[in-house]
Every structure is written in structure tokens, then in C-alpha cells.
Amino acid sequence: MMSLRTCPSFSLTFSPSNKQVKKLSPSFKPYNQSPPSRSSIKMSSISTNHSQGVEHIVLFKVKENTESSKVNAMVNELQSLVTIEQVRHLTVGPLQQNNKITSTTIPFSDLSYTHLFHSRYDSTEDLQTYIDHPNHLNVVRGFCFPICDNLFVVDWVAGDVALPPHPSPGTAFRVSFLKLKDEENSKLKEEVFRAVRGIKESVGEVSYVSCGENITPARAKGFSIASLVVFPGRREMELVDPSEGLVKVKEHLESVVVVDYVVPLK
Image (cartoon, rainbow, N blue to C red):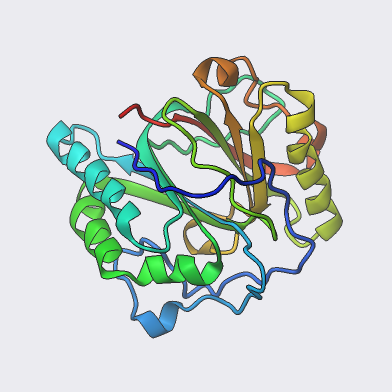
């Protein structure tokens, strides 16, 4: 189900850039039920002198009792978007786990989803081009909206680093979204970032960690920080508690969403 592009070898670790990244305007609403005109959803100006590595993640909640043929059609059409020139990597499929509560000290959300879409871009401009692309808009309007109850969209700039290699089929993702009690406290955010980045050092079987502050708040339900932890496979991921790295900053967390995903086999 996953299409790969040929690309050079890349660094395996993301870390948030030290640059101040301006949040996008609330008018930027990817996957909006009534998409605005192109001119009304332009992203805020962000320097792109270097490749910044932009992560784009969408969680879908497919309506109960939806025909499997319609779900498969949605997944296949979303996968076809890999042909858009600016897309560096794309994978889409069903979630393996959604908010598995393993610790009563972590405020896990009751939000529930069924599918994950993940893609990467070299810059926010490339992401904007993808969002504006007619193929993207047609797929979302024609195949996603009709069968989905809910969407959750988060984008973040991983920093001035090269994008990592395309995850191969069987690679496992753990994606976390954090809502903080004090969203204006920059020192608190950096403390949370350190805790998330520390997962790679504290857990042996982690391929890389990407994390950053959400730049498209319109459909993120107030969650401001996102992370993507990649494992070689599902077995390695399941050995790690979903609350790993979060216990240290639990007093700063208002709500947490954690989902597990495995890149589908061809």
C-alpha cells in the first residue's frame, strides 16, 4: 500500500529547530469541510534557506458500519497522492492501537481514530502546494469527508535537517500529541521537548524521533506539540510503554493522544 520514491540517505534524528517558527493563521484549515480559496489559506512566512523537514499527520475516524469497499477506496486514493511532486514520503492505513491507557498518571484523551496518514515535505511551501493541489482536494472531498466522523490534523517543522529515509513496510510509528496546561510558557515547552527527545536514548530500539510545535492549529483540537517515534517493527514498539518519556513532564500535560501504526506491507 505504500509507495516509495528514490532519495539519498538522510540523517536519522530530528530535533526542533532553535528558530522561532510562527504559527499559521487560523484561516489555514487543511481538510476543512468547506475549503477556502487558495489565497485565504497561505501559510505564514517561514525562512526556507535550508531544508526544514515538515511532518504532516492526519488522523481519520471512519464512521461505524462503513462498507469496507469505501474504506479501501479512501486509503487507495490517499495513497495515490504520493505522485504529487512535493511529497517526499507518504504512508496511510489503519491504526494498530489508539490511546492504550497504561498509566493513570498520564491524562490520556478519550479521542478515538481509525486511520493514520503521514507525509513529509522539504518546506512549508511544499506542504502548502500539496494542500492546494486539486488532486488532494478532490480526494479529501470525494473519499474522506463522506465516510469520516472526525479528522485531526497536525503539522510541524522538524528543524534544519535532512529528511530521514522512507520507512520500509513493517516499520512501526508511535505518534503522540500533547496539550499543555500552559501553552504560553516557552521554558515548559522546551522541557517537554527534551523529555520527548530523550526517548531515543532511554529506549534501545528506536530508529529516530521527530518532534515539534504544531503550526496548523485549526484542526488540532488544542494540541500544540507532536512527536513521531519510529521503531524497526511492531515487536520493538510494543515493548515500550506509550507513556515513555511523558512521566517526567506529566504535571505539565492537560491531555495526551497516543496512536500506534505499522507501515502496511505491499
